Image 1 (tube, rainbow, N blue to C red):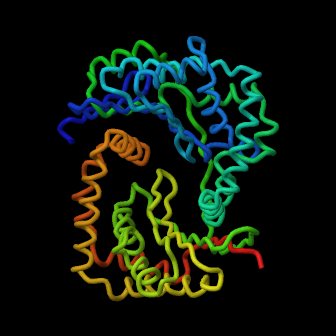
Image 2: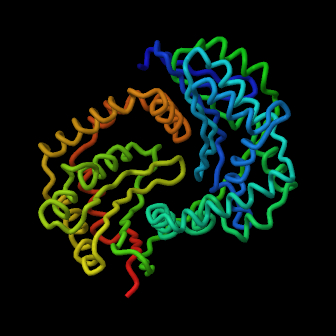
Image 3: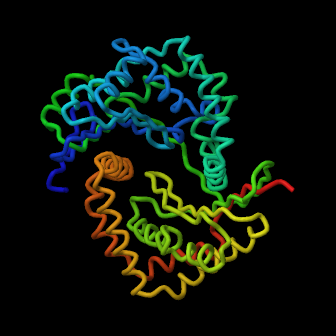
Length: 403
């Protein structure tokens, strides 16, 4: 696919990424290189609030019209807020691409920030906070982040009722104007579209204002925390540890280690905890690599009385990998990862997010070199990372049934 890839940075700093595909579906995303980690403690959640409000109406479209222009043309519309990125995306039939790019551009260029809609959406966000707390899986992953980081990353990306209860239109609009400038945007398109037409449209639609986003310093920590909750039957455990950043080539060794330990039914922990001992149904994990922070998580759902046993099994497997991993197993995992990489490129939206993530982390072109970088991972690199974990450099959060 690399031969079909194009990149252009406009004079105003906006980056356009494009992978040409002769398919009937095209995916696109406008992403601003800012999120929860770029917020102070007393404004945490404001990026997420802005994301919600941009769908509530523009100078040209009502919120209903925004949805209709995409959905009535067979498309899907969505958005997301992370710690380092906020995105506005859609997937449409390729012949409707011009409508899609016009709608998304309208969202980020002409939002109304209507006062009445703002107050209504504040209530929606409060409901989302309650939903995340009630949703066990969302809750435990929010909590493990608090065990890994200090400062603003100890607060959920959607903020708190206190921070989002007091933020007003003036603060929101000021933050929007500071961040939503062309030099902070990436437009990524994967599908059947014309690159020159994309460039021409964006050059005409966007101005030349620029700004610098002030980044919060990320402070690491390790912590073990257990909380009780009524009405649940299982202990929900997330074991996590800090991993190399994407700018460090050892991130590929971290990906290999994660796959060995907990990615899939052939992983060591799935075999040891579920298949051999029948201690859990769900055993899974993944590497979360971002530009300025990176960690690997392992999730296991088990009975409360098995918590310590499961923790010991996890650490034992890291010990085994650090001392017993063979070239044969390593090469098998590399083959697995390369195969999964190829499969992930099949869907236009998945590939769009692959390229965007790679761009935010370093540069999009790196994604096309995934296979060769995985092949370069050495046995010693993987063993060294496993050794650091078994020596106690990890965090753990468990939500367990209340007695």
